[in-house]
Image (cartoon, rainbow, N blue to C red; front, side, top):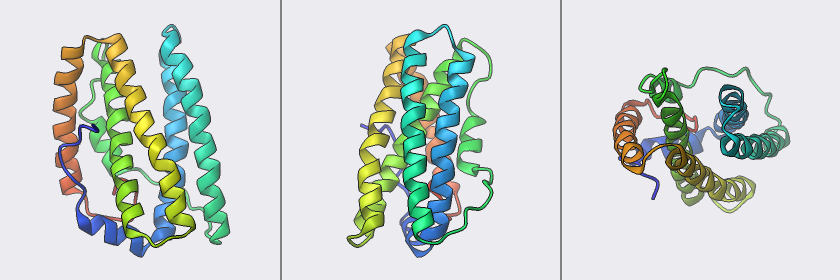
Length: 191
């Protein structure tokens, strides 16, 4: 369903659960960036009404998630640090086209793959963590990630022929799998 071509390395789960504070800081920034990405799509494609409507709702939901995760950060007494570049996302974006007509398709598919990887990693965290607040947090967020993945895929298919979407998704998913295999397994959502 998620079109991921590789599983996360089990070493990532160990790194993430060994440093949950760093994982939460990274995740709060991920939620913020997801909202920002949605708004940048509204700015770039204001004439695509369906896209705009979905991105407004998406940005609002991501900001709600930002506030939710930030609440857990505060409860744990963690001081939020400045955001740092996300090597996973930056490397994935290197494979995205920057000119139309492929730019929008790639933006939607990259977003879908990021949501899919987040969904997979939430499930890994749910399976690894004992009962408690953080497990409940990830369990509550995981269905949203799956829904966001489906939304981006549906939008791609709304604006592009299905065979073009499928072919490009296959290419980007292969690149994403290579990136995930090469990551250093840091306590980051996509690290």
